[in-house]
Length: 202
Image (cartoon, rainbow, N blue to C red; front, side, top):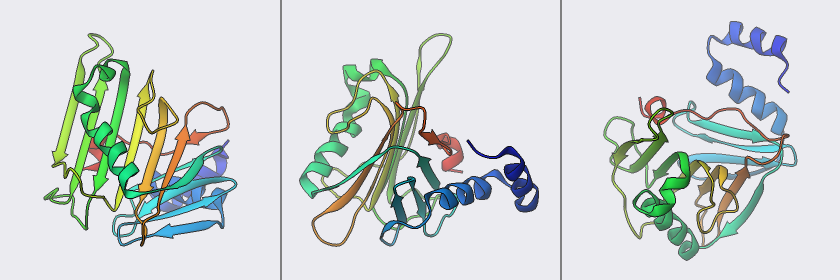
């Protein structure tokens, strides 16, 4: 659990929750294995994991507790992504309460959305209607430099180990790229920063 007194002190000194949460997760994760490219930096340790964007520090997410990570090839990554791209058009979307997918193909800015694809959906609490928001364009067959998925569902998409959780991918030089999966199935896992797409994009 985060120390409330520490959090309030940091919040007062820093003036915003983004920096405080990021600092807390980084402190808890500590030193570990680092993977990076021109878009993002990922750190993994026995305590947890996080990623942060190099040119946009506000784009940060981390988890403390159990997670899995492994190296994936281009073919498996593209197959996984294609399934995620198409998921909203399949019957599986009926199981989804919330889904947020951010794919970064190259250096980008948040104004033009030229090198990203961002999709978010959330099911209404009153009428069960799916509310969707999309930015940018899908580039089928192109390996992204980074992607992040946050999913709350009753069924796991093909290629992922969880029905509800967080996953992020970072492309490395060569043919092996890192995929991190954080299932929301254990009480010791704390996803400390999960923002809606409207905040991510503006």
